[in-house]
Amino acid sequence: MTAEPTASPPKRKPRNFALLSNWAGAAFLTPAGILVSVFVIVPFFWIIFVSFTNRTLLGRTALNPEWVGLGNYLALFDPATFFQRGQFGFSLILTTQFVLASALLGQALLGLLLAWLIQTVPPAVKRITETFVIAAWILPEVVIGFAWFAFLDRDQGTLNMIIEGLGLPPGDFLLQQPFWVIVVFNTWRGAAFSMMLFSSAFSSIPPSYFQAADVAGASSWQKFRDIGLPLIRGHIVTDLILITMWTFNTFTPFLLTNGGPSYRTELVSIYNYRVAFQDFQFGKGAAVGVIMMLINLAFALIYLSIGRKKKVR
Amino acid sequence: MGLTIPAFVGRIAFSALAALIGVVFALPLLWFLFAPFNARAELGLAVPDPWTLSNFFTVFGNSYAVQALWNSFIQAIGGVILVGAVATLAAYALSRSSIPGKGAVTYILLLFSSVVSGSAAMVPIFLIISAAGLMDTHLAVILTFAGGLLPTAMFILRDFIDSIPKSYEESAMVAGASPVQAFFDVALPVIRPGIVVIVVWSFVNIWGSFLIPFILLRSDSNMPASVAIYSFYSEAGTPIVTLLAAYSLIYSLPVIALYLFVSWRFGFRFFGGIKA
Image (cartoon, rainbow over all chains, first blue to last red; front, side):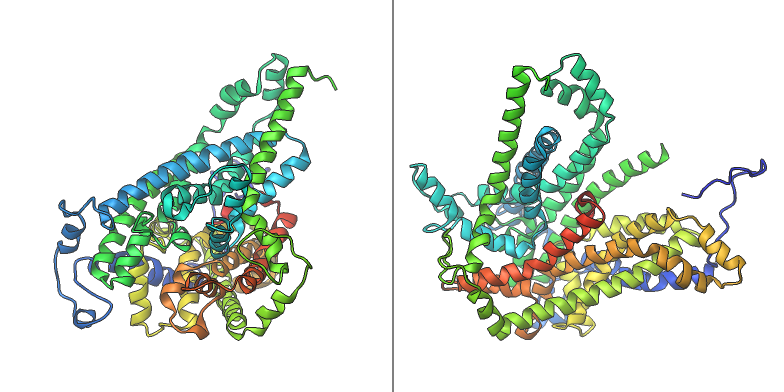
């Protein structure tokens, strides 16, 4: 923000004269421009091109790929196999369920609940709870993957130890309920972001609103429903879009399940990896990537248009 | 205290619920508090008897594990230097020059950077690195991350620079400094806290990353610790749990340390808000 000179004569807005000449500015921008072009812009267009070829990682078509038109897309959307396990449609539906269950329901609701709870609890409880929720979010994904691998171990894992302690039969959850494992896993991993966003949103509400409600004898639920929730609506929309995009693109469940057993946790990101780097079909993998980017684009446009509206106001 | 009985009960219920959620979040990590210090650690939860550092000596005696940590360090530091320097220059230009089309460029970059995610763009990134002859090098990972992290880094820094009054540089220029001198001698020291944020954020992102090095690197001698840990526990046979537990802890330490640093210096909300 440029500070308005207070004693300025009534000319129009103080003109933003530039400190850097256009030449110097261009020079300063060049390195960033090159790096971003090569690793962000070029991939976007190159992937579209590759998706129309039958390029492979190895073999004859690695060097001389042939133009196959919409062949890769037709193969992805082939109605005969679309919904079968290990096919694109199955993976896409699985990812949709994963986003709905783990991001929109899991992370957002749990984050909202936590943000509301830690407003009122004693500082010691707040600090301990926050520490573990945030630890789940900041630790490197491979460490988290290994921690859950140990946690869920059939014979020795902490989870089965607790379940047996409660007198219930233990289970091999990675084999029996792999989808729900990655849903819980992703909820656990990402709830911290929603918690922190909502928590800072709640703390920006003037305390006098809540004090007035207290005087009127409102319960915590009433304060949440009638004051807290309406005032952080904008933050909730932001949060939902961001966590949807992140969850849609996440590769972390691969570290826990490898996409298995028998493709039951194969999200589109993992499907993309398998098609391109295990089956070596780059053309088909590129087509998957293009569809992922189109979905990302839709969410990004919604997000940016909301951000712009806010700025204009 | 003037609390009514229902309000008092309500507060206790709230605390109990918050504590319960905290415990549930802690459970998958509890194992990590004990296993690294237990010479006979297995996948089960057990209090070490006796507590020992022998697992850490095992890690430092394993040349592959040490090499992988060193590789993580090279890639993260290389990426951080590149992102820090390039983003600072670019953000300064976006804030202080009046190049036409700045706003549009900013908007397009922001859009692309959120659309081209690593898991969607793995095929073209692989092909670009391959075409550039950089396959299986540290530079491949460094450049890919620099390109991917730069847009966000530039926006954070530009906002930061926008909030600094121009009068600092203006007075330097009135005193006879050239624009470039004003940048290096006046603006840069003032921008430093913003650069620290970018540097920490990039470091944590590169250090913790798995997918990009996993597809761009082939040989063991270039693998970062993330890929090493994954191959330690995903390969057939029983993983060497003692080594892995201690190794994972060592690998997590820089991230934990940086988190503590940021929350001490800037308050933690900030860190949470910008982790991509």
